Image (cartoon, rainbow, N blue to C red; front, top):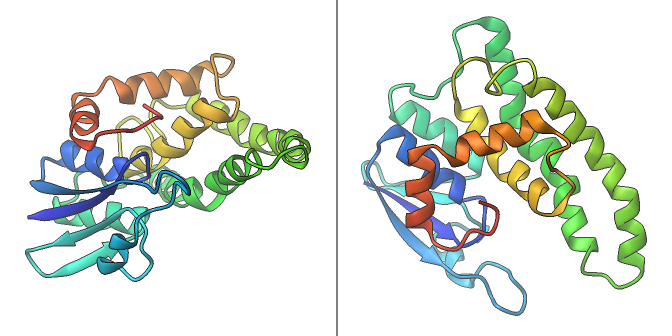
Amino acid sequence: MITVHHLENSRSQRILWMLEELGLAYDIARYERDPKTMLAPRALKKVHPLGKSPVITDADNGRTIAETGAIVEYLIEKADGRLRAPADEDQRLRYRFWMHYAEGSLMPPLFLKLVVSKIPIMGKIAMKRLQPMIDVHLDYIEDELGKSPWFAGEEITGADIMMSFPLEAAASRAGLDNGRPHTMAWLDKIHARPAYRTALQKGGPYAYA
């Protein structure tokens, strides 16, 4: 049995969705953010020294796995390769790119925009400079999703799981709208999946769905 240490309104919603897609049994240990700071509670440090979510514990072998990308790869292996990279070499390289791009390139400016939005006056100035940087990413993604229905080709993979959170965040607070129809269609498509909807019901508060 896998336990997902799930923080409300966080990246860990992706892990619940993935587990539903894979059909793996899991439990949820829920954590609420501090209402003043919106940070994760100290209780998460008892699970992993970084005190962040997502993190999973696997009762089958006693392992604790942190970091979304590492968890996604771990679960793919545990599910005998379902949602794995495509066999085609070019598509496999696309898969690898998007797996790393989600957190390595796309999330940093989105997170920075969230942080500076809390700063009076100077934050507004910084946000005007950040949005063009974010738009470069959103335009690139729109172009790529115009070439194939999923990020790594013709079928959904772990790369789509990884890209869900940053693009939901972008639609919520960083200018992603119907002006980028391929990306919005992709979001509508993942939101309509039964596994996604079930994970949302189980996960509790999640502002980006």
